[in-house]
Length: 64
Image 1: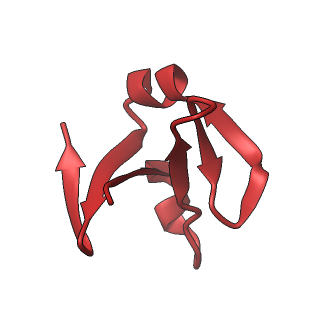
Image 2: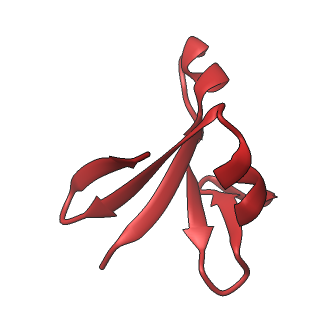
């Protein structure tokens, strides 16, 4: 099953980097470890400070 995940570039400065996963039912990217932190899909897609990846069979591919 394919997953779409994103990270915020600025977070890589820290020891841990939160990962957000797209919830297709709500069209929000939700933080995996805290689902209350979330961003609308369109906001993440339009923000150049987010890197978006497609994950399939443990392979991550950057979506340009």
